[in-house]
Amino acid sequence: MRSNMGSTKMELNQAVRSVGAETVQEDREEALAKVEIWRYVYGFVEIAVVSCAVELGIPDLLEGRDQPVPLEDLASATGSDPQLLSRVMRFLINRRIFKEGPASSPGYVQTPLSRLLMKTRGGSQASLLQLMSSPAMMDPLQYLSRYLKGEVSLPFVGAHGVDLWGYGAAHREDCDLFRLAMACCARGTVPALIRAYPEVFEGVRSVVDVGGSDGTALRILVGACPWIHGINFDLPHVVSNAQKIHGVEHVGGDMFVHVPEADAAFIMWVLHDWEDDDCVRILTNCRQAVPPRTGKVIIVESVIAEEPDHGADKLNDAALMLDMCMMAYTNGGKERTLVEWKDILDRSGFASHSIKPIPGELRSVIVAYP
Image (tube, rainbow, N blue to C red; front, side, top):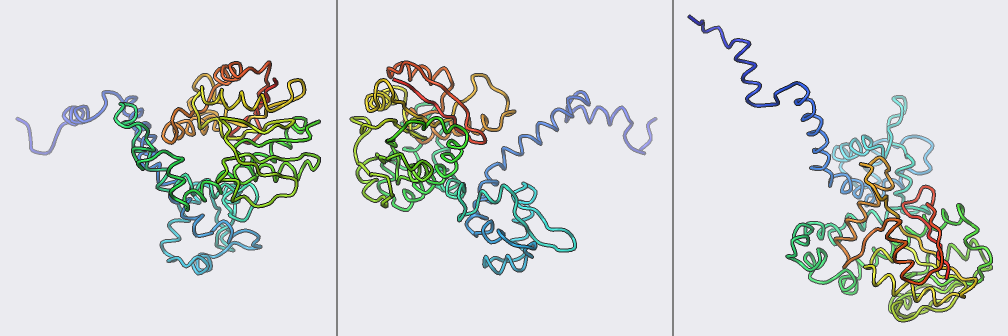
């Protein structure tokens, strides 16, 4: 007769099998999968906490310090509760945004990542991060499943009742943040383009920036290449608020109707907002705006891989995330593959084109020739 001393080993094994995997290997695989899925469950925390640090101005406060900044000093400078701030910094150190000083000099120091989040630094991504973490841009992502099932016309419309362009016209603060975010993209990408491929601008005396917003891209380009005359082309209400820039002329108009003439047309991070047929209309107007024999259209956009690489290429992974944003924000906009770019360039009447990645950037440069 069995004693009351407890369960047998066989019974314990049966209990384990009844609540889990059949084998140790299956159990290990499920455990690894859980660790991975937790990153998705709490993935929203990363952008929220990094945005918190930007709003507090922490990257700027740490810059140029000879010694690590102690917690108490950082809390005082940001007006934050020290205990709460220490938890935020612990999280961001774990994400390699900031570093801790040595034991002999406790405090916080900058990293290459945190320098990209300074509001006062050229090439900063701070405004872009603040835009993407704002409710205006986060809320539409909650409507993706309803969009796929045809229950809303667009995720952005589902969230806000109007499309992206109508929302920007009615919400000045968000529109200003969008403009700052696009400017911060230009401050990072245009210098990288000039450094990597200066020959793109060889022999070019004039450039029209199609959808150039406040003219930041041309400010950088004309500053580096003073022989170039810049034409900043955007909607009339956009260029009417643009500041004067030496060597740059602001022109209002509609890229779907006409593009001002120049030696080269430059169009950066615009075409991914539009469906293929709209891109063909825009690019056809750009082609017609440049000389048929010597002109060129310089496109700066992401190019996604034809085959999935399961996140091995971090830039391609970021481009795929951006593609999901385009699905949520625009009517038919998307990031494109090499094949898709070739298709719309051919349909736009270009004779040839080249595509090269911009080192360290999410975008490539596509040069199309009439």
